[in-house]
Amino acid sequence: FKRHINRDNHLGAKGELADKFATLIRVMWNDDDHDNLPLNIASELAWEKHLMRNSSIVVSLFQGQFCNRLFVEKHPHLLTILDGNDTWNCPRCNCPRRTTKQLSISRLPDILLIHLKRFSFYGPFKDKRYIFELDA
Image 1 (tube, one colour):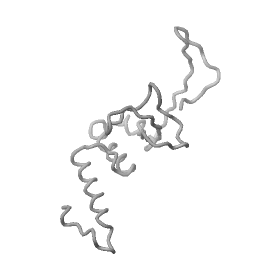
Image 2 (cartoon, rainbow, N blue to C red):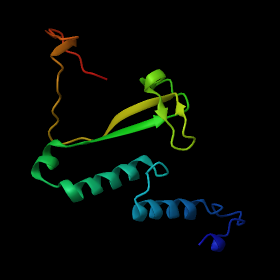
Image 3 (cartoon, rainbow, N blue to C red):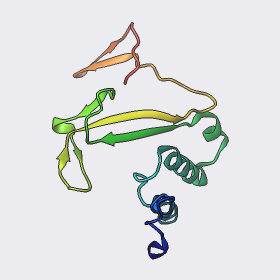
Image 4 (tube, rainbow, N blue to C red):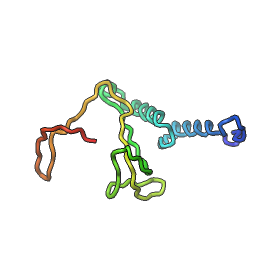
């Protein structure tokens, strides 16, 4: 298809739309990674794939969907930095890289259950917490 795209038309999009559409089709049919897709489309494709194997009343009521993204470049508003022993091994350059991690909820369940961490572990001992914290 690439030889049929008119990239020289000054009124057109220089073939960007055709390229993005080809990427979408390739990912949908080949089950490639979803890194090149917009987040909402990648999320929807992953959810549909999950439902093909896991459709039930429990899933429809209690399961949501997380979005876990890693960024090699620096985003100061993200909370988690993977560095030192926690560095991410980049599949492109095959080297450990300092990254930031963003975890968000892309689909809320009908019924949201939140687990409160009530106990702390210090070595072999377990202490009960009296102030609850949500783990980030």
